[in-house]
Length: 432
Ligand SMILES: [Zn+2]
Ligand SMILES: [Zn+2]
Image (cartoon, rainbow, N blue to C red; front, top):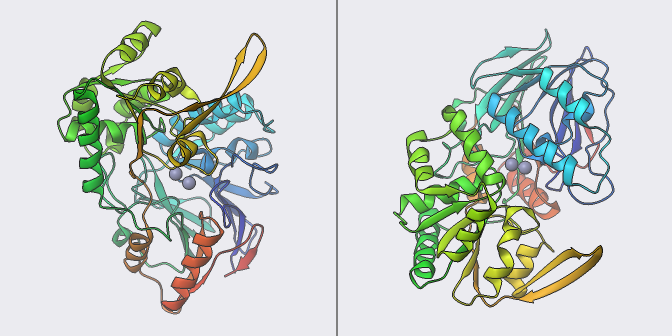
């Protein structure tokens, strides 16, 4: 009898967290992330007594951001890999520095987290104790991302984390055929309701647009999440031989350097190095000025224009009808990026001589959204699940990491296919 408790990520995208408990009471936590809205930013708290291990699927803070909290009262090993640990630390430090929210942990807990990290390679069955074994499988989402097979007592529980089985340029795809027979699946459902457009078509259209703008004397701002999406955009520009100037700023630049240090997590390090040679890193203000003056493509976080290096450029681009802002990532409801796409305005806050000013600029530049998602869409989630093998009589599926509509819709579809599927709610415990 294994107990499975959903600590977060239930009918929402954010604060993912799952607690598994063996018959003897040994515990393992899979992911412990944060969310950016609401009063409750963290997954439900757990009693860390008998916590035998924590395992994290990838560095995105909706999966990793709350892990330091567990190290306030635990010294359990954190199963991860070098690239996930390194970038999680960068993102969590950044989160603690810029957030107005008071997280109940800080640098000390982050240090303890690092000291307890244990690296686990793909496909290696790791014994945690007599009750629990963990194995990582490639999740295809971003460099270093994994799905986790947790064997607790006699049950095989497979947690996808964030997965992608559609071809991208940065990482290899997730392949369910490597996963042995399972009893329970916990699957993400972010885009269960969506169908992504043809990737190749989007890539071609994106590069054509960038070439058009820069050939006509304009410049293109590509606000992209610093981790993975910025590097994917760079690879796409290189793939279609964009030969104009490319600048990379902020967190995106830092992560490019980290990726070079861990080539084994990329699909093709040679292509990545080649694409980096074409780009200029903005390391000083003077390069930022020359980037603004030239007709170049500038890749700069944040992906939703909420802050970061893109703020150095956005205003001058907005007012220039020859230029463009091409968004390449998910734009949350109410975010500045979404408002720019939907309403053609950019809302900003700034401080001038201690005065807070809220301003609105009407966009004169071209703006468009290009879907370079790193999550499987509905069709591909089904394809992935079709590729998994369940033990006889085992058909339990839990749909997490999707908004209420996506998670419940996906569960319903899986019920129609003969599975015993639900979209669990926060703090629900199931015995399997
Ligand atoms: Zn993710
Ligand atoms: Zn996620």
